[in-house]
Amino acid sequence: MNNLQLSNFIGGEYSAPVNGAYLPLYNPATGAAYGQVPDSSSADVQAAYKAAKQAFPAWSVTPAEQRFQVLNRIAELIDERREELARAESKDQGKPVWLARNEMIRSAQNFRFFATAAMQFASESHAMEDKAINYTLRQPIGVVGCISPWNLPLYLFSWKIAPALAAGNCVIAKPSEFTPVTAWMLGQICQDAGLPAGVLNIVQGLGPSVGQSMVEHPGIKAISFTGGTATGKHLAATAAPMFKKLSLELGGKNPNMIFADAQLDKAVKTTVSSSFLNQGEICLCGSRVFIERSVYEEVKTQLVQAAKEMKVGPPDAEDIRMGAIVSKPHYEKVLSYIELAKQEGATVLAGGLAVFPEGHEQGWYIAPTILENLAFDCRCNQEEIFGPVITLTPFDTEEEVLMMANSTEYGLAATLWTENLTRAHRMASQLQMGIVWINCWLLRDLRTPFGGAKSSGVGREGGWEAMRFFTEPKNVCVSLS
Ligand code: NDP
Image (tube, rainbow, N blue to C red; front, side, top):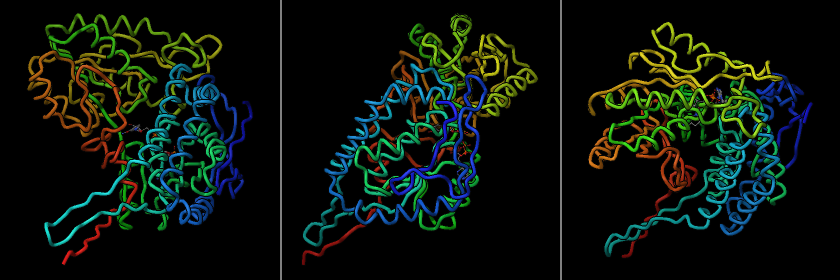
């Protein structure tokens, strides 16, 4: 797949961007360009809108069973093409190929899950004794926009598109220009699955041009966005005067709290994953690890040893634990935070530097990094780094760790390790987060509400929450007299 030339997918056909402009596509493993992605403009968004608008009347009344069949077929085709998709994703994003395989399974699950949701989605009804009966129609919104980031490319893309289509909308979707390949491949899969032309349109390009045009477009009535908090803020300000429906899944700075009474082996093993899986580029990674003082040294020793043993290397090697960082700017950003941490007084316990695997010296690799001796309110403990960097902080009491955990502007997810049941529930209710995991991490049930509090977002995705977001409720009140 060298000199890969990507295109947009509009009205059921692959097409070049109207302006003929392209951006280079980089392989994080080598730092070299290996293809081109359209640098589309508002003209392509307009063409996608026209196609989506035209497809909407028929798709919105397509029987639920037919929508189920098409979405389920998309899931089957993703499964059939898993290896090819996983290799493409790994090359594009830098993640280990074994991890990309898991994400392809989960991408198929997203389509399968919302295929069945299309069949099960039902209206509420409220009877008013002998006076009236209310029923609530949940109608598709029309043309909606889905904008996704680069960390879990096809997974997050499908997490938005699947419910939007299941609810009967037509979609304009934009993947990140850093990781556009599997979204491009999805166009063909949708076509093969029999999704009618124009129901899903994929416009490739930059956020400030394509994404911005989508948010500004008066005909796109709802936007589901996953990305950084600063972008989310800008998007909300743009969309507000048009009263667009918005779902924003934004950044995180998640606390991972380990109490002395926890099953420490399990806590340490999972913490290694929750710190460094996908090079730490998962919004749910626990970047601030708080450890009760009596077990601090013991847990620290084990984490440092695990980090030092972790193999970092080219993503297509099956035996590596961490691959490459997604892009040069992000690689530089993560390294600059490590420098900042040192200025803030950090002790580097593991990593702290770039890695240059043999034969891949120009790629963007960073060693799993563990820092300590940082104040809980310093920049490195407050700002999202979104890379393989964690900080360790000891604590003495439940009140203290709760205060530190809640001290950032973010509120996405927390992990709690304790065998004390009452403490676990007490803390879960006091953590200002959208998601709390107790004695586990990243255990996901697609029916549960997913999203963040505070600056981590607005709204929830998953299960009925997503189906409700992508529909407009209309109450109908029928008098019985
Ligand atoms: P960005 O906010 O930079 O980008 C996200 C998407 O928005 C990209 O497709 C981007 O395009 C696009 N975009 C950029 N500017 C605009 C604009 N003005 N209008 C519309 N769209 C725009 O985030 P990253 O891609 O860097 O992703 C990392 C971030 O995502 C992290 O903060 C992470 O925490 C967050 N995230 C949150 C999750 C959650 O569920 N809460 C899950 C996963 C990630 P382009 O790439 O072309 O700039």
